[in-house]
Image 1 (cartoon, rainbow, N blue to C red):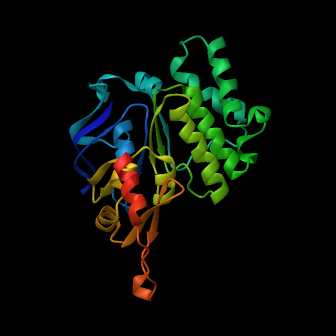
Image 2 (image 1 turned 90 degrees about the vertical axis):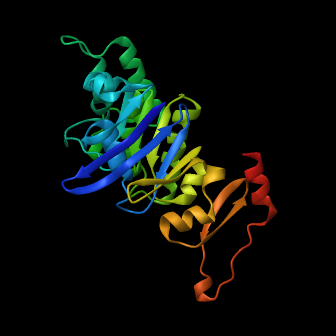
Length: 275
């Protein structure tokens, strides 16, 4: 398990994570949700060591990450930031090859296994025929799939993603999150991703961590944790939570404008009882 214990992290004098403790279950997709500025991205950066942890610790399988070392960490945790860039001249194939850097010897390059991983990663995201295309010539959806291919080719057991569907339209949000979902279901990865849309969270995630002001407000399986009460506490938004076609739906409440609330009904109670 990847775990943060009593973590405090700040930007300058501004404390962002305030004695935060949370664990991420192995082989499951966990969504981090909460208002802007609550510390979701900072938590991922603190795990990666990009933001210093002032107190507390982050461990992987009980081992503090500081003891693993940067190269060892790259073999075990892959990280996809909010904004990913590469040089204009770089091709998709060259980008994916960067994923194997932590496995290369000092005098060697990609092994036969590495090259097989690269080819499989591109095939998985549907870009096998574009290896010679420049990354910056790809569409937004293709480019995001390209960076997911790099994450796959890194072959790390744990994957951290910071808003992987940011700036994508609805079609590509679902296409990309389908791929992210496959990281757990097919490839057995542990995935932690920042999401802003609660309905995407309830559609794709196994677990959810709801954050507010640098603390964990609620955490657990989606069906048990995404409640009207939790949404109200975290977002200050009244909403109705109900089940449609087997999925939880979060509908912001417009009763203040004269529209009636929808009743969640007994179907939601049955869904949560089964979770």
